[in-house]
Image (cartoon, rainbow, N blue to C red; front, side, top):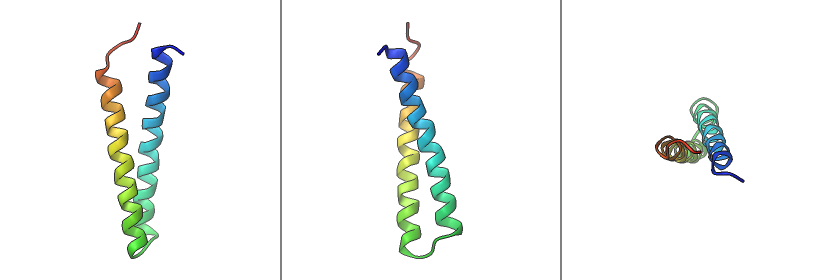
Length: 65
């Protein structure tokens, strides 16, 4: 597998983490109550941080040949 294809799959993981974090944040704010809401929000923010790190890596790794 080439480095370009690997970067593409890694960026897909970042995009999926972003959508997952958005869904979990909306779920925790509108549907859940109590400690379950807090745990869900915590997981959502972890996914958002991971997605940001992945996108940061992909953008600053530069072009591949």
